[in-house]
Image (cartoon, rainbow, N blue to C red; front, top):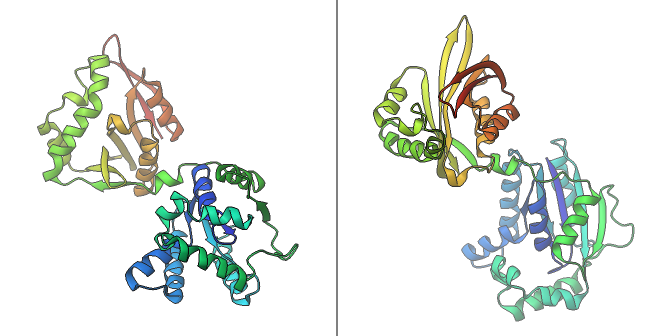
Length: 348
């Protein structure tokens, strides 16, 4: 698990640059005020020890996810040995996983930072800064009480860059960081952390059936195939649900039901064969990578599988590409349904 530490004085743009960097990489943003604001709101005052404890819990939980890494913002007082020790301890956590730690120091003129301290984005995400006079006063106090800009050559770490973002837009700075450290572009990790499978209960079959009909109806209208899942009755779905060795799952994204999948099990000559039939995503959630992530999660749920089977419509190139991307190969078996449509078999 990798870590990007964004360092800099108050209102230099750490959070905003982090937001932009999160858009173009598989790193999630954990900015300093994400723990500060809840503590102030609940406790009625800042409690540094509690903020630190909550940060540690977030670090530990996050390192169990599938993301490439975290963007962490920190106002580092370079004249405080305790801050050096804290940064080293945080870095060690991520390095212990085999990850790389990157250090980005942002600097900007005071006048620019004072103006940034009043921006809508700052005030939206940092409630404690909405008293503008007090917020500006704290910022000026911090930079006179502590040294918040490093000396030339002071930071000894290999993966370190310093950017003067006085006159740079946050998205430009984010791209500079991505290019400087050759960070990979955004992948599937974020979606993997938002998509889950939930086993369907019998009393939920009516809802599942309605989703199946809605998902397959566009294909039925296109191919007019009488074997379409769009035409299946609720009784047929219930019979499949009750069949031994068959399990239905809702596909959830951000807690909402966006599709469904049925997994069947067969023992064929001592081989454990699993069958996907059907798999569907509601039309408004299609072409978002949910099907791919769902199949990967199913593979992980059934690690004992010797083989996987499914079939799909030969004329639907997008579906064929999805299954081939997941490692399925065509068996050569084809079944002509009508003059418009042919079913082809895949196995993995």
